[in-house]
Length: 223
Image 1 (cartoon, helix red, strand yellow):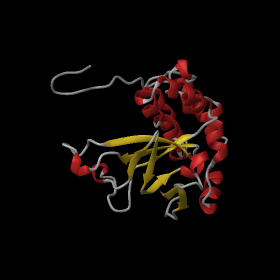
Image 2 (cartoon, helix red, strand yellow):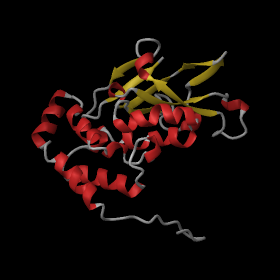
Image 3 (cartoon, helix red, strand yellow):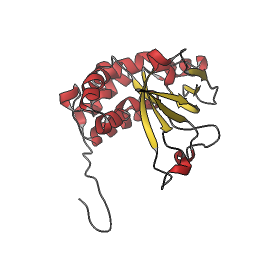
Image 4 (tube, one colour):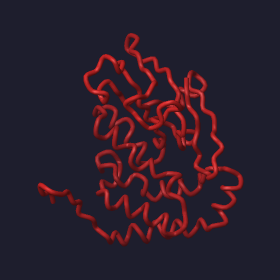
């Protein structure tokens, strides 16, 4: 419902079946599991795989692309339940929503190619490169440049706090394709690229893990 003064989004507070299913998975990963991961600074591979196998990380992807086609409130129920049980959704929550860029802005060919495999878990798209060392999260000032050479783009820049990039097959990358001094609005001239990390790692893309106070699996990425 939308009025002139406010916007509201209807929510289903129930999703009982989803909550029970996620809770059953989380019960298999008690606090000891997470404590060991924290001490070793490791990624919860088994936990993420269990949620993937249950179809929960692809619940927002439309059915025609292999997902469940559920509304946002169902995704909220998944994440709420994970944290309610003491588990950590930060390890995989991006797998649920970063696909939205492909779904909304990708070509039909790209949707058919990537979304079914993201839904099944064969591909992981849970990393996005935005934050930079000198500009933070002010995306209008980012320094990463992408220049078109023939039918390809050459990207140069550095991103920091790129979480889960070591455990992702694909990454969304924000770069400037038109110099800032050549655009009317600072938000113009920015483009999003879908980077296949399986091909890019070691071939221009360098990834260095950042030691942090919490086990957040975040990295410095650059070229």
